[in-house]
Amino acid sequence: MNLYNNELDVFISVDEILIEKLVKIGDLYFPKEYGGFLVGYYNETFKIVYITDYVLPMKYENTSTSFKREPSGLEELFEELYIKTPSQYYIGEWHTHPNGISKASSLDRIALNKIAEDKSTPIENPIMLIIGYQRENITLSFYVSVNGKLYEYEQRK
Ligand SMILES: [Zn+2]
Image 1: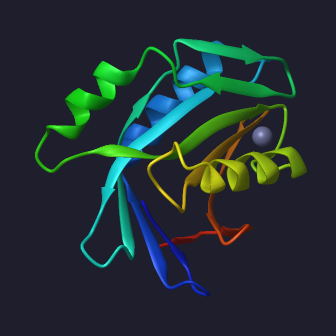
Image 2: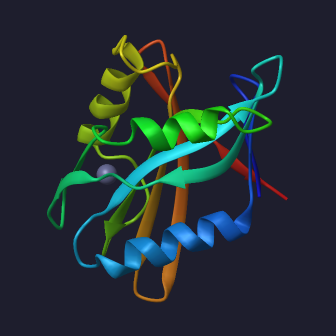
């Protein structure tokens, strides 16, 4: 699956099998929200991000309308991803919207912009994937935070 943001001229490349896995994991926690971290790498111009993997949090709090994860306890896992070839690292977040659409809520927007500003996260422009679960209908939205603003990616055929 390839996604594009025209305004920023940036791309996401992600394997559909990875998305299917995340949909299945999220479904296990239905009707509560669930999520975790997205892992991947950028090309040398930073225009394309390849989402290659995911990490599930060891600590989290979730309700039917909220999801909060903690990064603690995952240092070794991220280290193992980092020493792979190509080197893979944290590139953003994912979470589900049970009985909802994949559009970012105002809290999601605030959360992603905060992560972008947070100096302890290693990247300036984190990605957010939201998976919306409605009866028989799964929707996906991908966003990136740039200078305190969220931009949405569009799917490309
Ligand atoms: Zn959300």
